[in-house]
Length: 165
Ligand code: ACO
Ligand code: ZN
Image (cartoon, rainbow, N blue to C red; front, side):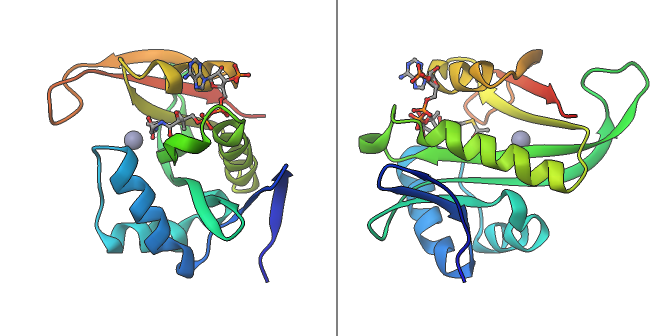
C-alpha cells in the first residue's frame, strides 16, 4: 500500500518504492549534473526508506528526495559526534517548480530522518544554486562551510545544516 504523506493540490507526496526508482533516475538525469548507479538508488531506498520520497501528479513522477544517515562530527557542536541525516539529492521537474513541491519534499524528509533519531540534517549545494539555497534557508538550514572545488567541474559547495529536536 502506498502511504501518502501529504497532498498538495493534485500532487501526492509519498514514500518511494522500488517501482519508482526508474522515474526518479529519469528526473535526476533531466535536472542535475550529478548522477548515480542503479545500485546506489536501491541502496538508499533500502537503508532509509523514511526519507526517500517522491512527488506524483496523476501518475507522473515530478520530483524526489533521497537521503542517507551517517555518524560523524557535528556541524554545530565543538567536539560533538552525532547521527546525521544527509540529503543526497533532491529535484523537481522544471515545469512543476515554485509550487511548494520542493519544500514539501524537504519537510517530509526531515520527518523521516527524525524518525531515525538523527540529531542534525545536512547537505551540499552549489554556491551558484540560488533557488536551492533559498529553499533550504527558508526551512532553517544555515550555511556552515564552503567546500572548495567540491564538484567535478571545480565549483564550490555550501555545506548547509540544521539541528533537529
Ligand atoms: N527563486 C527564488 N527562490 C526560490 C526559487 C526561485 N526560482 N525556487 C524556490 N525558491 C525558494 C523560495 O523561498 C520558495 O518559497 P516561496 O515560493 O514561498 O518563495 C522555496 O524555495 C520553496 O520553493 P518550492 O516551490 O517548494 O521549490 P521547488 O518545488 O521549485 O523546488 C528545487 C526547488 C528542488 C531546488 C528546484 O528548483 C530544482 O529541482 N532545481 C534543480 C535541481 C536542484 O538544483 N536540486 C538541488 C541540488 S542540491 C542537493 O540535491 C542536495
Ligand atoms: Zn552530499
